[in-house]
Image (cartoon, rainbow, N blue to C red; front, side, top):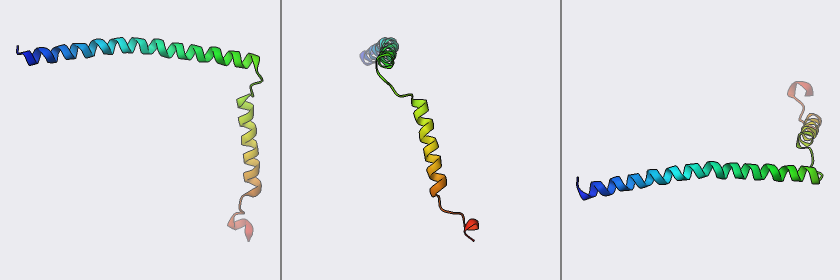
Length: 80
């Protein structure tokens, strides 16, 4: 084997080893971030008056539907 081939093989081995290390840490980092966010969310929900997003969304949709029904242009068939 030539020197170039040995260098290329060594570079490929380095990439594989570095890639394996990064993928293992990615799972740990993502789990840590998820758990930290969950704990922070529980703390906020227990200690502060956090609005109920589902109720807020439903109320907004009802108001938007009411506005649309009252202020939409009449259809051409209704105008005649």
